[in-house]
Length: 382
Image 1 (tube, rainbow, N blue to C red):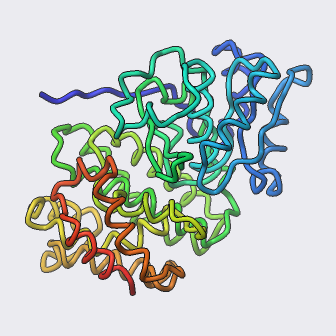
Image 2 (image 1 turned 180 degrees about the vertical axis):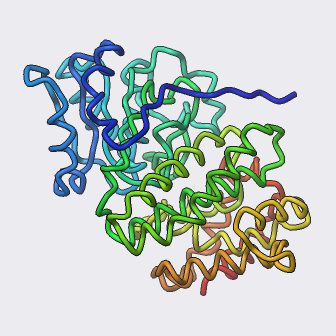
Image 3 (image 1 turned 30 degrees about the vertical axis):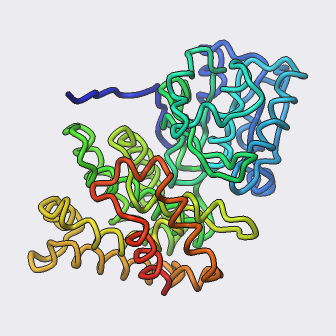
């Protein structure tokens, strides 16, 4: 049996930001907590959002979101939410502020000092109710699609990077204005763009039955493949920015099919202490090796993938698609491998162990053993 559900209220277009005040009224949010990060503040993006809020609206800001959000940051933001009597959250930024906002919205209304019991791997999805505080998500990058997704990834106090997830965590409104992504630096455009690309291709390759999601994933994949390079080369290319924002949204719309081994690897890699590793860039680095590994489980699907990527019939297979992705990574300036990102060899075993315990390991079309995860890491070393 296939469960098919879509999804939330979305306002999408250049100029959508002007709808913010009216949308907050519809949701009954009168005292929002703004969850963002210092980069968004420095880039002037918060100032653009603030212009659309009523001058008399009480506004509280938490701008301490880490690059990889943590349970400690959640507690800091939650304390402010409660002390200021907030009644909703407006998340502004990339995936990190949006994921942190989901954690705050959850713990503002649910019992317990820790997020961990609500994580996927702890069977926590069923514990999350509709009482989650209302969230408005305003993305400033085109990658995670967290503005329409049911999940968030948080580094727990235990050091594990775990996902919380439930339909109740999907933001009540995704306000997607591609204008906010104009001028995003090339390396971030490339990394976030490849995040969107990976979401679409991994969800399409999942064996879960959901034909509408497959169609959306193929459309998102085609958009990401066509426009990520243009957006990276020219940050003011409005057509490219529009289509990358759509590709990111579509990639998250199909998360319900489940992701795969790329994410099972990138989650524990991104959670390694002592490193600052961009999630989308890690996905790009791991993707070619995983595409090759998956061929016995999803071989025929590569024909459709190759078709939307415009590859010749001779390359309509795992090797052809993987080679095309590796070549795109090189053109985008993605690091050549994990070694080039600064990882030490002594992290390999820990990453492999983390991948086996990651929720995405359960939905990958071909589940690697620990030894096979080690091999995938080594193939991605560069």
